[in-house]
Amino acid sequence: MPDSTFLDATELVLNMGPQHPSTHGVLRVILKLDGEKVIGTECVIGYLHRGIEKIAENRTYAQFAPYVDRMDYVAAVSNGLGYCLAVEKLLGVEAPPRAQAVRVILTELNRIASHLIWLGTHALDVGAITPLFYCMREREEILNIFEKYCGARLTTHAFRIGGLQYELYDTFEQDVRAFCDMLLPKVDEYEELLTGNRIWIGRLKNVGILTAEECKAYGVTGPLLRAAGVPWDLRKAQPYSGYEQYDFEIPTGTNGDSYDRYLVRIQEMRQSVRIIRQALDGLPGGPIMGKVPKVIKPPVGEVYVSIEAPKGELGYFIVSDGSTQPYRVRVRPPSFVNLQALDRMCRGALVADVVVVIGTIDIVLGEVDR
Amino acid sequence: MRKFLRKVFLIDLIQGLWVTFRYQQPKFIYTEQYPAQRPKIAERFRGAPRLNVNPETGETLCIACNLCALACPENLIVVGSERDEKTRRKILTTFTYDISRCMFCGLCEDACPVDALELTQDFELASYSREGAVWDRQMLEEGPRPTKYAY
Image (cartoon, rainbow over the protein chains, first blue to last red):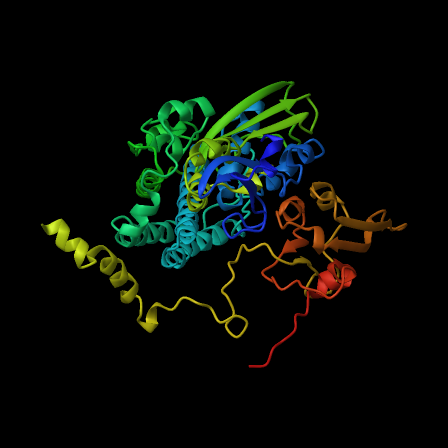
């Protein structure tokens, strides 16, 4: 940002955050304004930096697994899956089919939970308070399933390298099926509340447009890319953990604006339910833990594994020097990359639209700062 | 024409309000009146740690093998032991567990070969001082004693 802006009478520099209702203490956006119009933005991040990548260098492979849950804390299971898959690839082992199916069920449940949180908070930012309560209520059911399965609600540590630690509890299938049956009518209810609502359309339509070319140029992934009309989903493009067995569609939008992203995420929840039901129907028996040595000591080498997290492509790059601790762990978080496009989306919009755009990216700052 | 009427009579907004109105019945109340109403904790919940003792003799089950301390990512477990001269066995003397640094990942209970260390369903771990968060062997064996509220 040029230095002259502070003395220039026509342009105003405004600090949005870190204390701001829609950035809650962890993101600061410096806005350059011309009246109500945004000319430029600059993000200041690092308020939630904990040095997770550095911590990895002082922990064994198994010990680092609980830490990855703390990056994207609303989708902790996806983080754990990505890390476990990366270490498994490094070791050259694969989880047994039963473990893979259970992983898919839990990850898809977590995708729904993440999208519910997004829907609730995004609607809250825009001014609709009711959806938040309803979304939290449905998310509670997912968290109860997590608690019964692995003993924690948010930072689950559900998966271990090579498979699973816990066998399914007795009423797991029943609980998940009941949840699936319960969720679909509720999603219709959210749509009833929001999709046709003139205020919601007025605030979201044609706000924060990002075309397919711009998405590719910025490296933006996830629902933002799909809302721009690119059917790119790593679950289909490079299936992992047995996703090739399941039949589902990739919802896409056309305009690439905030409203299309909303529709894409709503559709993704329905598709997730479809995947969960298929996984439950074909749940194989057998062991849940692969052949993993007690002391995990991968051979020298490096590996990159990426999965489709609720927010986009989540990648783990792990370098092993042959010891029990990783030499380097680098995380490619979806939110960090998607946040880059904030400036492009905000330019020319109004100040009130900045809140909408921050919400529509679906950022979790734990993941941006790590 | 239909679109115009929908717009004039605020149909889209009323549709949304009707959803909210449907939830006015008292049976849709989801709020839990904690602490008067206790939450149902899952069996596998990972909460306060406990060092199990043999219920008949009162002796500790811990064999002081130190595996939990090695498994812990935060290095918060300290196991003290001494060797019994007669039986040549390790005997547990002290055991401290720092709750304030624990993230309840469950790696210590997975590592325990005799199921002595266990994460229980207790979740009320607040204390008035930092020292109070460091649990010694007695505290781990007897469990925390949270304040009981009269209602």
